[in-house]
Length: 211
Image 1: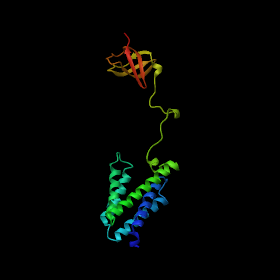
Image 2 (image 1 turned 90 degrees about the horizontal axis):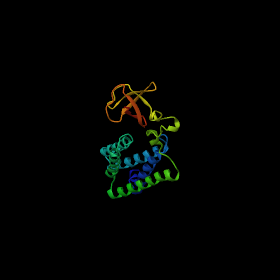
Image 3 (image 1 turned 180 degrees about the vertical axis):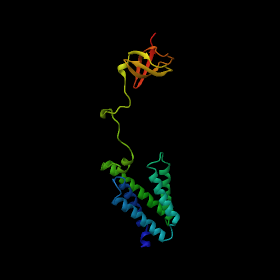
Image 4 (image 1 turned 60 degrees about the horizontal axis):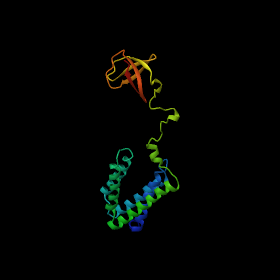
């Protein structure tokens, strides 16, 4: 069995099944058959090379570390964890391989076919990455749904009122018995001074002293 698992063709098939299985798992709402088959293929790959004496405990630890780094990439900013994880996986395959050239060819074939399946799932079958959709918030607070980031007080434009507090330049004013946070045009405005709204920018209400 070990001799069979060490066959270059079988190695390529196992790596390809592992890659494609994990790619298909990205489109599944939960861990399913494709992911199980992919992991089983990788387990068989490492089992054969471990029993043949080419893969040691360090190689298995490197592979497991690469998987963890790829998982952490889903939550960490940047692409450092993902890059290190991918590098650890590829290095673990090379360390477990009997021949570096043959292993390189097998890895390239596996990556090519896995990438092809990934684009076919998205472009041809129109599938979406369910795994990432669960971890990333795609809902938007839209104005049509009643959500607003701030209240646009354009109704106050041109209105006159009184500075309730000193404006340096921000403060509070009274317009028609309503307390409103305002900001002066830039200068100091004393308390109880008469003011007029000259500009409204969303929730920012700019006033000028009326002399």
